[in-house]
Length: 332
Image (cartoon, rainbow, N blue to C red; front, side):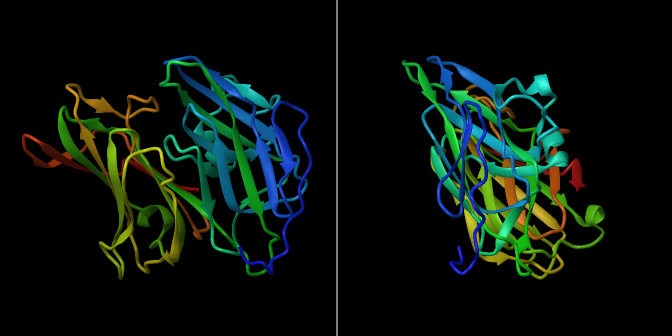
C-alpha cells in the first residue's frame, strides 16, 4: 500500500461475542465467535457483526485467519438493518439471507479459498472496495471436521482501509458460477462456461481487472479464464493448478485490460476417481466452479450456468469435455 496515503482510523466496537478491534493505524479487525464441529460433522451457518461505521470505508486489503474445520466461507457487506438481528451465529434462512439478496443490498467483500486457514486479498494502492456507512459484515460459513476429535475455531478478518481522494479507484465484483456440474464417473473432465456481457452492459467490457480468485473443491485440479473478443481475444487472464488447502487468489500486476472484450470463458478441470457422478454443491463431497474478481467497472457482474452440464465437445474412456453458454448474466 502507498505509504503516502492517509489511513482511516479504527472504528468502534461491537458488544457481542464478535468484536471489532483496532489492529493498527490502517486496520479494522473483525473477530467472529468460535464455531464447534463434532467429528465427521458438516455445519452451515451465517455469522455477522455490525461495523458501526458512520462514514464509508474504503477497503484496500482483506486478510483472513481461521482455525481448523473451515471448509470455505463467503463474506458480504450489507446495510445493518437489512438482515437485522444480534451479532453472532444464526441460521441464514431465519433472516432471509442469501447471496443474491446480499449482493443486491451490498456486495461481496472476501471469499475464502477452500480449506485455506489464512490468505490476503490485496488490491493495488489507492484502489478499494467501498463499504457505505452503517453497514455490517455477514458470512456464509461451511464447516467440515474430517478428524476424529471435536474442533472449535473462529474466523478473523482484518480490513486494511485507505482514505479516499480524487485518485481513488473503486472496484466492483465479478462472479461467474457453473451450477450444473455433472462430473463423469472415473474420468478427468473439463467444464467451460462462456459468458458474453455486451447485451447486459450495452457495450464491451473495457475496464481493468485487479484481483481474481478461483473456487473448486477436492476433485478440482485447475481453473483458467480467457478473454472473449477484443484486441486480446483468447488471451489468458488467469490460471491456476493445484489442490485445495492453499490460498488461490491473485493480484494481477499489471491489471488485465482488454479494449473491446465481449466476455469471459471460464474452464474448470477435475479428476473424479469414484464410481458415481459428482454435482455442484457446497458440501465437502460436492464440487464447485466459480470465478470471482474485482474490476474498475462501475457495476457488479454476476452470471451462471444452471440448465445443464453443457454440450460434449470431446469424450473417450478417460476424459470428457463440456461447454455451455451462461444461462443468466446480470449487471447491477
